[in-house]
Image 1 (tube, rainbow, N blue to C red):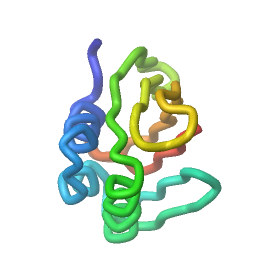
Image 2: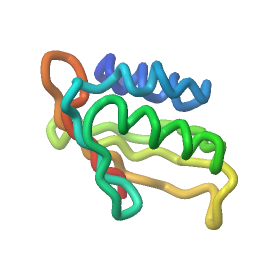
Image 3: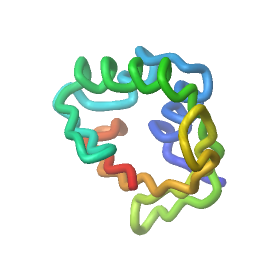
Amino acid sequence: MNLPNAVTELVKAQNNFDSAAYANCFTETAVVFDEGKTHNGRTEIKDWIDKANKEYQATMKPLDYSEAEHTLKAEVAGNFPGSPAILTYYYEFEDGLIRSLKIV
């Protein structure tokens, strides 16, 4: 699967539970929408994913990427009800980094 570099690095950081590397896949002013909450900027994103990593210990397995729609379907497995789940990640990019991410 041919993923953008930022997405490849994000999956690797997620699977290594590396919150700093995960946050570095985003622009300084990026926005993440997940579980009904909005996380603004790289610092908030790092804090959010650090807490999620500790709570859920979730790993990602990419299943399908649409370059035209900037979407990634991934199997996410971890310590949460309904695991594993197929989630869709909606991306917007800026200068090779993620500007916006919505997870549903």
